[in-house]
Length: 83
Image (cartoon, rainbow, N blue to C red; front, top):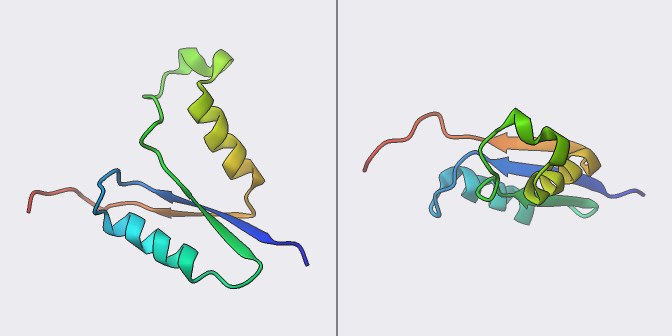
């Protein structure tokens, strides 16, 4: 049986993000044969179409992770607020 690969992307960079905690829980509870790779967006540069000819390494890694995945889960905050 081929393993199923899932890329899990959190839209929040906060250390205490509920979105990231949700994805960690999904990864920890993944059944046998399913791997869930948490993807961090924190190291990505701001989008600049002028860089498309020579992509930064962090963008290449993200792209390769998503292309290699059988599925992608995105957990993104609806809004940000002060507590």
